[in-house]
Each structure stands twice: as structure tokens, then as C-alpha cells.
Image 1 (cartoon, rainbow, N blue to C red):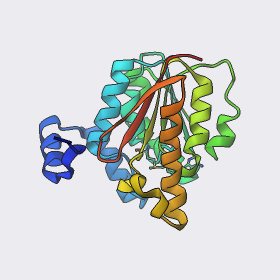
Image 2: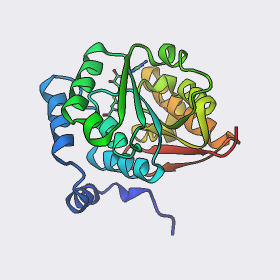
Image 3: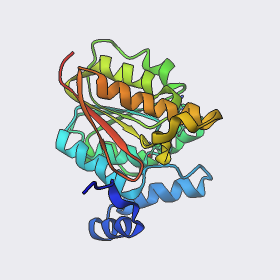
Image 4: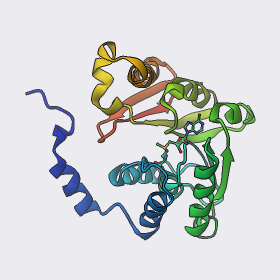
Length: 227
Ligand SMILES: C[S@@+](CC[C@H](N)C(=O)[O-])C[C@H]1O[C@@H](n2cnc3c(N)ncnc32)[C@H](O)[C@@H]1O
């Protein structure tokens, strides 16, 4: 029998959230701050945040880069896995989003409790990432900003990840439309087409072994196996 991913049952989401309880008080405060600040509530979902935390804790990275921070929700999930003395570098285009991320991570006492250095850089991610020192290797890159740039972010990650490092890209099911790109038009075609290209490029890149985790949004993950 052919089995579909996740079966699309909302009861499964409710089940997972009630059993694994992925939102604690710090994450709840960040989600609340995004809502009350009037920012779009487009942070990762509760279970997706937990997936990121579990992955990060398993990898125990030293340097993590997040592209697209919004208010710091996924950032906090990732930071919980960074080893003490490590660094989190968030890149965010919107001044308001970058400022809320800084405030939220300060309130979560990340530097004190986790001994993780936090650097939030405001501006176009591709412009700012181009300033990253060529020899400073990264352990984990989480891509969650403008979809049309995902392939360019992948190029940056492939260059800067150490062997054994991991790249993650969110929303890679393209809201279910990644299977019908030829029928899409306009902005949807550009956005979802870019996600399809990202998946196909990573899948075909001999420097990576990759997969797409069947989360609600699709989470593409590649581990770098060679330079
Ligand atoms: C989906 S939200 C990120 C959510 C966040 N990762 C979380 O789950 O908590 C996408 C973010 O990417 C930012 N963004 C969009 N285009 C960008 C760009 N070219 N460079 C940097 N940030 C960008 C947006 O301002 C927005 O805050």
C-alpha cells in the first residue's frame, strides 16, 4: 500500500501537541509578542519549533546561522541546542522584526542561561552574508526567509558549512503546491518554483545527503558529506 505523508489529519497535530507539549513559557511569550506587536504570525508551528530544538540538541552545534528571524521563536528553539560558548547569528531584513528578535532573546536570558552569544544582523540577508569571513565554518544553517532566494542561501550554506554540518529549509512543500509548479502562475509560481528548485538542487548536490521531513510545512535537510 502506498502511504501519504502525515495523512493530512488535523487530529494528528492536536495529538502531537498534547503529548509532546512543545510550547513552554519562553516560547509562549515570544509567540504572544509577535501577535501583540502586529507582526505577521508566520513563525514555525509549535511542533516544527520542537523539531528544530531536537535536531539542534542532537547536533550540538558551535555556530548556527538563521536566515529570517521574525521575532526569535525558531531562533530560541535552535539556540537551546548550541553548545555553551557557541554563537547564534540571525539575519533579518526588517528593522522591526530584528528589534523584536533582540528584545525577545534578551528577555529569554539566552546569553546568561545558555551561554550562547547572540548576533542579529539587520538588512538583506544575501548582502550581509557576503561579508561573512570565508574561513569561518558554520555547523547549522536554517533558511526561513524570502523563498525566491532559497537557492542562493543554499549556495552560501554549501560554501560555509563544515563537513558534517547541516542545512535546513522550511516550507519546502510550498503549501502543498510543490507538486504542481507547471500549473501555477504569477507570484505563486515564482515562490513555489523557487522552493522546488531548492529541493531539486540540494537533492542532486553530491556534497550533501538530503531528505525532506514530512512536517506540516515540509522541512528539507541536508548533511554535508564533502567539500
Ligand atoms: C517566516 S518569517 C521567519 C520566522 C522565524 N524563522 C520563526 O520561525 O520564528 C520570515 C522572515 O524573513 C524575513 N526576510 C524576508 N526576506 C528577507 C531577506 N531578503 N533578508 C533577510 N530577511 C528576510 C522577514 O522579514 C521575516 O521576518
